[in-house]
Length: 489
Image (cartoon, rainbow, N blue to C red; front, side, top):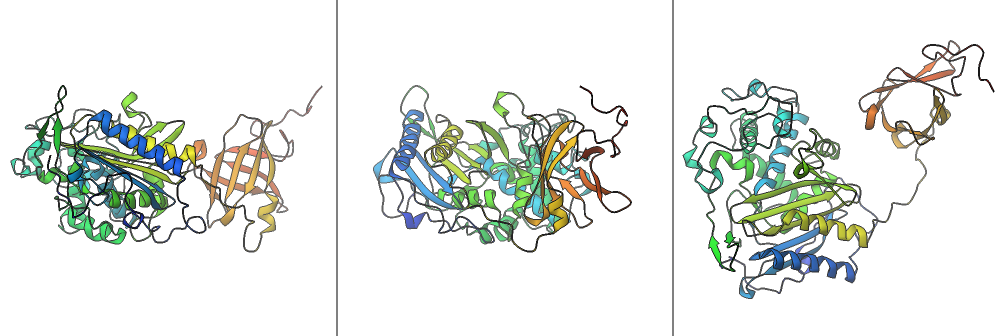
């Protein structure tokens, strides 16, 4: 086995802390003093999971890391040969994790107003095989495009075999109606890379990525082609402990689907960014939008669904977001829990064998289970208090169903049922005095305070649902009216 590496080696149990510290992204904040160091028993459990994954999966090498509260708190590595030790600065090919980078570039274009997610691709790209599929559908793999390019297998052949966009598609590029179901499409992301190039004045997508994303985040070891030290890709024989070298082709136009190489250290920075955002690259609210399900899950393999460039999975009762990746000779996975602010990353240099996505999810779960996040201290609202806002809090009734309204920072409201049934939602304050729903059934719906002729609050109107201060309050405009006989025993 030949793994190019820098001078010096270690047994892979843990990379020295100075090599893996990742400062919180600009514009974000964590707990006071930053993330605490992991307990010894947690670190041993992480190393055991990584070591078992490498041994049972028969991977020539495997590296793993955990990010908590914006910085790397643990990394580990296992190698088949001591003289070829893996570590956090060795490049591995990350396969479809590349798609998360391309999706961020597209969302930057959206946030700049250069495109809308609802735009048909043909609005921006001429000659595309799916001119009516929207940008959002391409991001979420619901455009109906074929899963792969026409032959030969693009991952193991030079991109020069497909020099033009038309060379990526056969006679029937669209296999399913656009927008109807999730159907993973690698060529779809080739089109998104071309879209980035078109709207950035012809600049190659990888150069756009370097300038706009990688450099601001300090990810100097994430590149289009391998740079030493890097791991070699291997296939492991299924019935014998022997290896076969895998080719590392430049995939050309298919690069946006899986071309990138990166290191564990760089991907720790990427995980911190995906959870917290960075104003220099993409706002945290946009990243939250990307991890919102855009299409339903497609069978057990897709449990959790798919967002805008981000996979969603359910593990241990939690929703994780991120992506898995594979290319000949390499496997990769990154999963993050936004609520716990924890992410796990695993890279290996083999085509098949270890279930890398499960290992990365387990690394995340081990930290969450062994060391639950310490909640931020409760603090009262800051700034002057609006008495009229305070007066809106407390019980409200939809018909006879009791709810409660709570006031949060920045004039935000929260509606929650008190009876165990009903719909809960958070609401963002708008400049016109209304509120917009952020989640659940009321996402995007408008909450209004309706006043009577004297200016007193009469009721709340939430998408035509009337909430009153009393159950079926006769004085309020309850749709259909209230029986004049009132409540009866």
